Length: 210
Image (cartoon, rainbow, N blue to C red; front, side, top):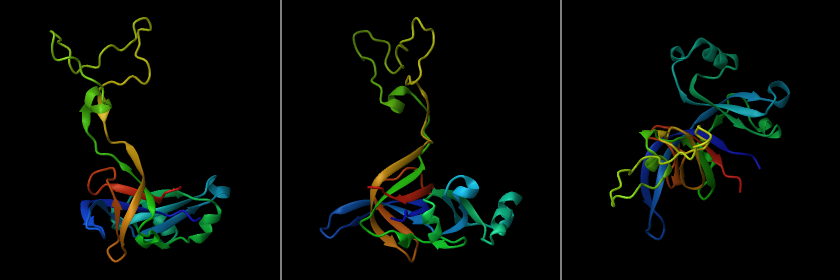
């Protein structure tokens, strides 16, 4: 089976109504059109992948190395570049400069959506890791701290200890989201449920392996 993937941007959330009149929460994604910029082969690069570009950009907005990369294969300048891992045999189904549109997906299919989660800034262990707080009564003066680090003799903090720190801004993949609607004319993909990241955040949509 040929793997399907595309780059997109998160537009926002909305809802549509199914045939029974029930509200279905959906995320609207501007998916593609994308263009094949380069084919990486096992023989030349050590792995098989498809380099795909998304969103037009003026040539003077690119660095000279990146601009030369597009000129080499006579592909128009694109703002974002991502690599999609494929089998060596699947690369033969694509050509450099070929357009990939949202109509590669169909309603009812399951997809995995990958993006960068919203940054929450510095957060304590209760908000960040779901730790329990201390008692509010009986003279307790310790409520939201991280508690004992459990390192008395070792005199160091053990790896994996949940402590306050930076929260969010991580790569997150939500699996098996159902495609509800495909709007080929406006390059829109509607998937059921929420996807990671803020509005206008970059997303990679791939078909689910089930």
